[in-house]
Length: 611
Image (cartoon, rainbow, N blue to C red; front, side, top):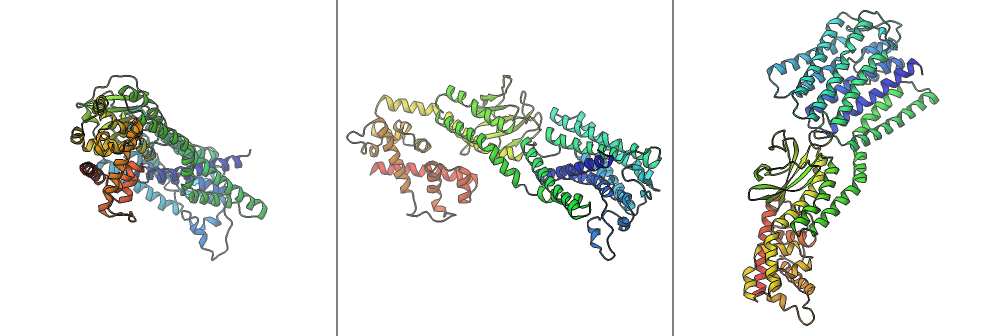
């Protein structure tokens, strides 16, 4: 392979990775200013690769009057297109990328941005702006007439070269120092490895300055352009490695399959356009610059469309999600004795931890102000004695280091487990295996499983009292007056939660109601038939709460809320979130209305008993 082919291949590959990785960062962390600064850094670094590629495959000289070509090359002087191949190396400076990266590393420093830090950032931007203005007038680098673009010596130093090179060297060194100092005080090993990886990449770019000085400044050696391109490409790949391996830069953590799918898809699309562009060049005489421009635009247009990776997520996660839900549904049916519940929680918790790549997972329930460990996954069996109050939260919460007492000081995510408006437990996850925080996709994936676990824990918490009532019913048929006095909101609530479980309903206090007994005639006095009779009575009472014969179109009027909530939640088994969306109500309104509706249903049953 010739030097030309090696240079072209390395620069094109590095350009592709720089453009794609920058787009990946901003699409996955659109609210992160650090991610945007890193993306601008990568895109600016891509300018160096474009310089080299355009010098190797320069656009043809256009006829006078065609001004539109300047829109494709806004950073090059107007007369560049007529000056020869080496002139294209004068276009885009690395200085702008150094300025953006210096700002990004300053934001990675612990603590807030103070006046001194902002002064350094502003000074960096002033250097970058001055460099762009000077380079546009070709006063930092000037092309050597007849120079070979395969060598750095094809550029000569302008009058401001030494000042500008020194400033860029200082900013690059400061960026590396920022990262190394941040790594030394990082609270976790993952954060430390993130910063160390980025610091190594920054130190590699420091070598660009002496290479440029020896070749362009002193003209001592004829150094191939591919050397500078390779050093810059290493820097780009170090950032990419940090993102993929340690979730550097991005919010949350990087999902390995997500970045892999996106990279494969973008590579396939870009490769396809590259082949098409090459065919146009060989078969139809299209200028060679088409092999650069067409794939570059393909990267931008197709990387902005994230449909591909969402489809892949659904395909690859479908089996995993089905398995998790099946285990949770079986768990709901097995929420009887304490030991059975503790044993059966292990498999769903293990699958949940694997799905989000958590280093460990713990499920706690509360008892008399203390948090009791109910189930664990990948835990070291270290005893945990933490008050329940430490786990109280309104919603999923990212945890900082030492936010929870030892031995959970490095826990990363707290998921409160709510049943109705009461927190019955908590799920605590350790740091993901390749990041510090969990990505939004991971948190969305936890919603359904944690809702199901909360429902199971709620039944578990109430289980002791329920079993006592069952024993009383089994011991003797309750007197009618006793049943009426025991008819409470709690009894009706449990009946609704188990409306399709005839064995539970048969042992429910509702089985002693006269309206149930009257339905048990002849041979219909069996255990199962008693449960069916209880179900029929509860559903009949629920239908009496229906405001009208037909449910109105969405959104339903307020008077329909109690009936819709009870019917959809317990009879149709629709998720609470879907019901809230259907009625356009908040979670607080939903829980409050459900409690009122269950109380109303208990009153309807009491009135049916009296008649």
